[in-house]
Amino acid sequence: MATATRVTGPEDTAPATSTEDTARYRDTGGTIVNNIGPGTLDNPRIAAREAQYGNRQAEIEAVMAIDQAAFDRVRELEAFMIGRAENFIADVMGTTEGVGHRHARRPGLIDKTEEIVTNLNDLVTELERGGSASDLAERFVALQNEARHTAMPKLSRAMREADSHIPKMQDPYAEVQRLIAVMPFSSFRPITPAKRR
Image (cartoon, one colour):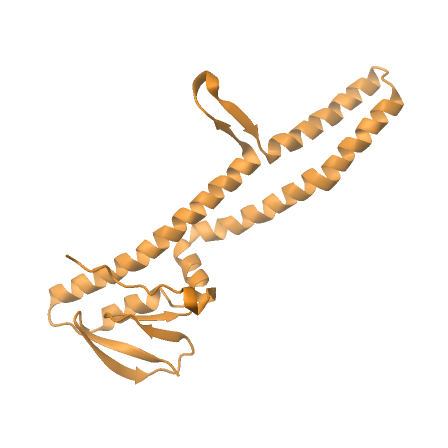
């Protein structure tokens, strides 16, 4: 059975009644309840709002501090998700590195797939012009294998990955909640407001 900490002010903590919630609670040594579970970001924010404070200014500061700590956690993961999505886009679309006349274009998955299609179309043109059918057949089989066993599976994987990025980027707050809920307890960093100087 887990216990929570009821907050009566920024400097004061007192044990509260135990809850029936199966989420694991951890006292941060501060003023806010933390748990690893579905409400990891919401529960400390709710606890800060429900707590009793000595004055309105203390309440405002405590709520702002825990909100800032929660959203700092979201921004951290959101930046990571944006970086992963940008890398994914670069892998699919290709990138241009460098500036001016000293830039190089690194082809992406789409470029490589379009190259296969172009090469297949070139084979048709060569066949129409009377090229050697046996040479063209060998090149066709090689391109067909490359398309079937390399390009198509990579494109399929890329589409699945793109589908997985969309909901995460639409609601990074919920994605952080989900990730924290499945992380090992030993690697959990409780959400604590930064100490003001």
